[in-house]
Length: 483
Image (cartoon, rainbow, N blue to C red; front, side):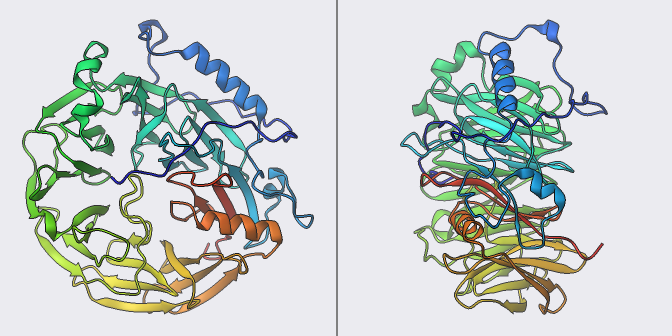
């Protein structure tokens, strides 16, 4: 919802690229989910599949050039992604992927991170790439036909949806099979003949296009309208127009929630039926100066609410809503120790907040705090390094993994905390080699949040590239000892 940082044009790979990585054969799409469009249907003029195929072949031939390109010059560690396959020790950098795009003034976005059982799929301003979570090997990649401008925060059935600019307007929708990189369908948000009149930037006001997935549907909302399509084939189901809005937001998953800022006085929250846009399941309106909202979770339904004056020092609460009627059930009151991070990054909710079925975990300076969602009361506070941010990453088998960020002179670490009482069971310090420390510190500055997936702590850039050394993904070995 807020404007992301500026980005830049693609740059060339390092002068000495790594050996080619040959991807495995791509299995056909099976099951009851979406399928690839028939070749006989004939793409419209704005698609260029032959060019995309050529670019894909070139990128795959380049193999792993993006890996180990931050610093990679520490003589004590391997520079090859293959080393990750040997099982690096806990706390050791397993692999890295460099950002392909340098910063410039074009306001280019890098929103979109999704997972399959073995892959992490990352969108950049001009391409989408899949990496093996364990080794970092590039599995597939393709270039976008225009700058990335929106992405669904969630995936459904191993399918995600992104939007790229067609001309100067964010209207080119694309559904992607995350396992193979196949484009399942591509459609314009409005017919090509109407794009010039209906989707000029002035008619979109200040609101960016937002995408969400729910119950087999793609929901799109923008400054003066909203639309739903079937996820399996892109067929349009419903569309509604309205007066222009200053900002919009949406979140999918178990529920479909939309937030609109239309006019100067109020904010509307709606629970949406994707098959009947004109009739919300419920709707709630709050006054604008009661605070800006961000959806943290749709199950349970948790929002962040910040005062209308904004700013990094604003107080804010977390609010639990009844999913059946939108009424407030509980409120977690602001705590001065909190550092919730960016709450308006379209594909992440709040970067410093983690929600489970019964609890809310919030990042803080030197602490991670746990709250009971049924009553909003604090359950416990885990005290870590007093001078460093400690962020909740995941909850598994009764343990919270909390990541303490690296600094230029201290590596990061993961603490495994018992969710019932906040006591640390185990802490793993990351390796302090010069290259690892430098790269981990750089990624601590990126706009995004850590994920713990398949024994890898992934520091992912979900926002923009604010500096020449901005990275894409840093994967740190984090073996699971609960199996």
